[in-house]
Every structure is written in structure tokens, then in C-alpha cells.
Amino acid sequence: MHIVLGIILILHGVIHVIGFLVYWKITDLEEMPYQTTQLGGLIDVGDTGIRLIGICWLLAMLALVGAGIGTIAGQAWWPALTLWASVFSLLLTVLGWPDSKIGVVVNIIVIGYLLFGFGRG
Image 1 (cartoon, one colour):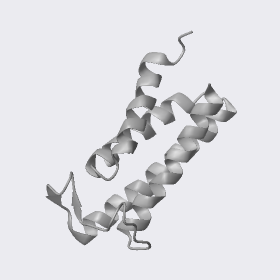
Image 2: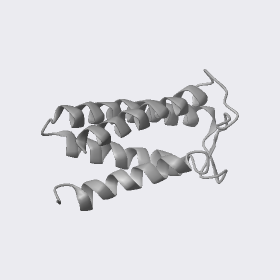
Image 3: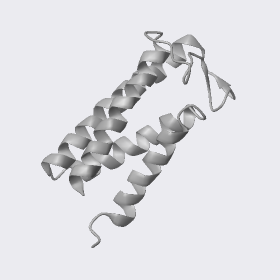
Image 4: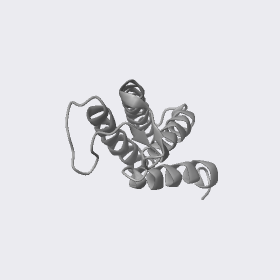
């Protein structure tokens, strides 16, 4: 199960690069257009704010990929990093709602597994 979770974490992390690329205007995607608003348009953070959020997406990518590698390698620290990275990712995906709603679901599943399923059975 740890290998599957590790792969999910790595893939989820790599997908976070999209937030960085779009918010830094490196690429333009129809599914996630450049915008300076968050929470479904409720908050406008401006160009500088969205670039800072883009950096957070990049940091989340690094944390999730690191957590995935640690999970696959069976490192003792993987549960703590995975929980931290998933909570951070959840905050970002909630901010990016509705464009990142799938990420919200993935994060909730991972956090639920860590809090309620890890170590059982």
C-alpha cells in the first residue's frame, strides 16, 4: 500500500506545478486560466499575491514529491511530511476552488488515510 500511496503523492505533487506555471504566466491552460482571484473569485490578491501563491504551489510540489519518495523508500519521517504536505496542499486547493476541486478530494483522502487508516489492519 505504501508504494501506491507514494506514487499518488508524487503524481499529486507534479500536478501542483500547474499552479506555479499558470500563476507565473509561464503557461496558459483553459482548465486553469490565469487570474488573480481565489476562493471562486471572492478574494482578489493581485499580481504579486498570485505569484506568491504560485511559489506556494511549487513548495507544495516539492513537499509532496519528497513525501512520496519517502513513503516508497519506507523512511520513518514519511507520515509526518505527508500530513504536513497534504494539509498545505489542501489549503492551496481550497483557495484555488473550483479549478482545483479534484486536489481537495485527493488531499482529504490522504489526510483521512493518515489520521484514520494508517497502521490499521
